[in-house]
Image (cartoon, rainbow, N blue to C red):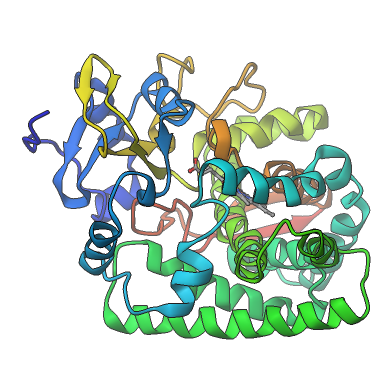
Length: 412
Ligand code: HEM
């Protein structure tokens, strides 16, 4: 397959893309076949059918180790400035998410049962109490930044609770998580690299110490359960730390982002906010629609382990695909009136949590957080409005969410 770079208006690192990526995605979807994007050396899949096809095909993997010799993997790491970061390589570059086959299945099995709807549902009262407390502390103010003052506190606190991190340490999780995750995006300068490595090291030492505490005195938390798995021989020391880190990081920024863009969508479609206020039973579909409408993790990748035929093109083993969940979720061939936010949209088989072997483990938890926060907001505030019409979105292809969301609100 010739890798001719097509002349496409696709500029994922630009400000225009950050503010509104959807015309760019539409142009990609309208281009026949998949499109080679030289900057990232990937073939981009933008249509819902192509994206789904790739991520549910068991010949596709996330980890390059399956398709390249160790020297080639090392060379690629150097090219991407992923080398010389020993802790990051041990605990972040290797993970449940970035493994495949037997290793992936084994690790996923160790933590899967704690994220089922029943287990997550047991956290409802605790999340509600935490959100009530946060809102209670803010409601004397007429104006807040919804992202920084409210959304940013919830996911870290709740995931920390599940794992067994003491409440007073949860704010540190956010700092570690942000400084590590930022390195997956565009700017791979040596300064950011050093920051990611330093934060991975601190995070590792912290988790290692907490693990020792739980080994001495187990509790009813995920860390204690993972220790039991490890004792039964299902996890190595490094896998233990890497899995705990992934759980803490995977749903952190993404939940904050979709809380921000979800509220922004309700403010942009006030008739949908009114619908939700009059029929609280719509909250479940409204939350699903928030994930579809502004997918907070819009871009992932896969490698082909053998020759594959996608969208009428043949790709050799080793091809890297960029799967655009954010674009698939706006594909009009799958979602009627796809650019409209519809709080009651049914069916809504969006792909914001992926599909196939790597389907998001935390999806029930993320949806529960959203349900509780939005239900509480609508109950406690009779008006919520933007203080400034312009909302600035984060730059980059891998994340989608507002930098800030300044609102004023009036208690009911
Ligand atoms: C806004 C919320 C979230 C979104 C949009 C999201 C999205 C995703 C997506 C798209 C994947 C699959 C990646 C791929 O296809 O390559 C994934 C995997 C994963 N997510 Fe989430 N996620 C969210 C929240 C969470 C939360 C709250 C947790 C944990 C508490 C979590 C834990 C995980 C884990 C462990 C994986 C790896 C699963 C595997 O490889 O088998 N996520 N997530």
